[in-house]
Amino acid sequence: MQSRIKAKFIPGLIILLIAASLVLGCSTPAIPPASSPSTSTPDVEFSGKLPVFIAGSLTVPFAAVTKEYNKIYPNVEVLTEAAGSATTIRKVTELHKECGVIGSADYKIVPQLMFPDYADWYIIFAANQMVLCFTDKSKYGDEINADNWYQVLQREGVTYGRSDPDQDPCGYRTLMVWQLADKYYDVPGIHDKLYGATGDTMRAKSVDLIALLESGDLDYAFEYDSVAKQHNLKYVSLPAKINLSSAEFESFYAQAKVSIKGAKPGETIDLVGEPILYAVTIPTNFSDQQMAISWVDFLLSDKGVAAMESTGQSAIKPAIASDPTKLPEALKKYVK
View 1 (spheres, rainbow, N blue to C red):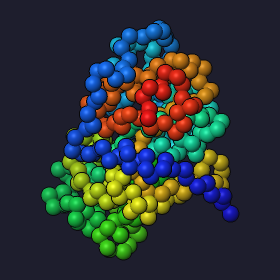
View 2: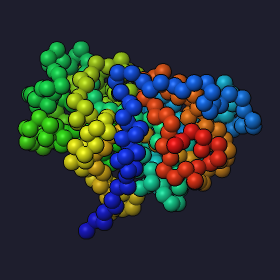
View 3: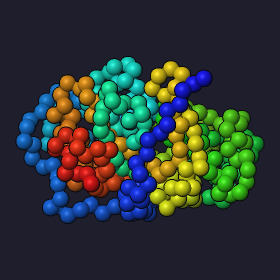
View 4: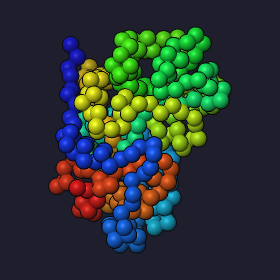
């Protein structure tokens, strides 16, 4: 029998404190005054290659952050690799690739897949919500809305995409949305009718679906709000009670559960629905810890937050640390 690894969770009170201040899809959190901690002039000059492994949904935000970072550290070559968050982490833990910074679309899988051998801390720095994207080519795109989307997806000839739950948090969050839709709309069987149906299409990570959507090979795709905005896609804003955006509905989200592959063969991780929160960490085996810290330092600074939010990615400020006592000294000023 497969062994089970229970998911660790930030206490609900902490999520309430951080998520209550977010109004995703409406406005971005205000950036604190210039007097708050901010990276401006380097104390140390860094040079060399900095591999940064990230969730696909962080590709555009982290490119914007790196562009500004390189104005301060022009001799650092930031090498970004995007994949599903679980795949991103397994490049370090299973393939033993050198990596300076990990950016995950789900904070929970960092401790589950990396602690204690490859990391012992993480920082929650961003949030998101699920949406359903479409284009002018999409069948029934002129009539789909937040009340009938699950019915439209079941119509003959309609195709819809999701990412692989074992590789990408957006994939298991899509399945959670489907599970929660059963309860929210009081229509039993929505998840079962959508999962594995003729129109159901799966790819490794959510951003892989965008090309299929834009070419017309897919009618709809489940994505993050930030990704939809970055690619100028039309989208259905799902009800807050199922889009995994609000601490107000944390107990409702918790009714959804998806199991994914664990850190070892035969193990699985049970993931329960909750507000979407991103995390960053630095693998302990990276050779130049100080250079990696300088990048995360900039990410969390006023300039880094501004660069990230300019792409439509909502930030959490101050950030939340898994264990503030284990953080590098330079990063402690950014967390509660």
